[in-house]
Image 1 (cartoon, rainbow, N blue to C red):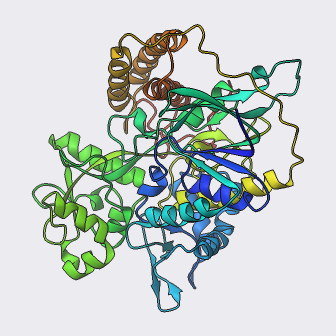
Image 2: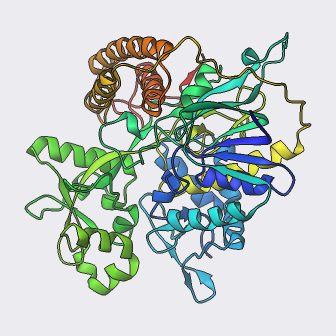
Image 3: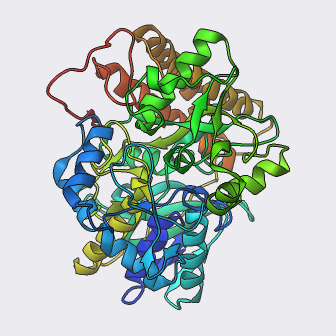
Length: 522
């Protein structure tokens, strides 16, 4: 058994920022599911939004966020995040993040849904630059322990502690060391979920393979409420190429003038929305989905060739180089693109300190529902949320009176055996992702949701039986969690009798009033 003051599950921006804010005063253990460089933060291209330029204002950033979120955002939470944005950027710069500059000022770009240029960035690989910088800081810190290839199994609560303990609380987590195959016990006074989203519940996603909703599922099983799980953001422009796995074409390409075209070169976005390519992601994704289905297309095209090769190479060097490897020169030809699942707007319900319903358990980043995103996330508000709530959670933990940590029971494998065949996992994983894509996608109906709910329940029963009888593996744990998250998404979608933001129902096409979040209680 390992014990620390704080256990953090996830090593993206939310996890690392929390760890670095805590480590001056407390001993911190950070678990990463795979290697430390695999996270959604690492893949973020566009940048981080904050009010940094003259002529911009907190009110304008709040307004843009509310419009993108279809007015379902929690206003105090939205103001809290946006008003702490400049401080978050300043802290990242202090850590050494090499944001692009123009003279002494930050170079700011613009993305869809933003009325101003307010996106601080490191060319077109902002997330990678932030992760590289913060990982170097964390590795060098004597009070931070970083462990790779540890997959969380479940949270440790009072149920896992011997003796009568009436206090309901989180005391750490069990995690599978995939190198040894052993489940280890990590005890802590405070635990932070920074596990990211659940994009892998769908067949096509821009997310890394680690995005299997682990934190969401574990928190739900431990008794935490979740909110707005029906709002799954589809990024409009994922590269369509047989050899490219989940490669995202950043929002900034449209922000800098890229046009969406049909195969014959016709521009179509002005017919769908007056903001055209600069409309929020839900509008653009639905427009592309409509055109593809109407015309029987495999993809549409994103064209920025009119800006010239020098501009493209300067602003999008990473994307340009990757596309060249695949035989596409974005400076001279349009990029084939399709929508793909990108972001989980709902999550584990938290307050402005990152606290969940379970004492001792915090959540930050994509796993959390803070109220910032509403029915649709505004571009580049995700990294901002990670940085702001990473610090908020850390400050709350530092101000709390640390309890005496009891000794949890060790993981018991005495009544299970090694699985004799794994076809149950591989088959059910594939069936789940295809079903979610077809029945719970960009456009939904009551009948599709009903079919999905029925099939998910059958798959859950099969996987629960497998889980009860065989030793855990990474694939089994991820499938178990994805099925739980899928059930929450479908249940939330069934409860929303309107179309709003990312949830569009043919049976409920109108937007209802007043706007209200969908909150599920275990």
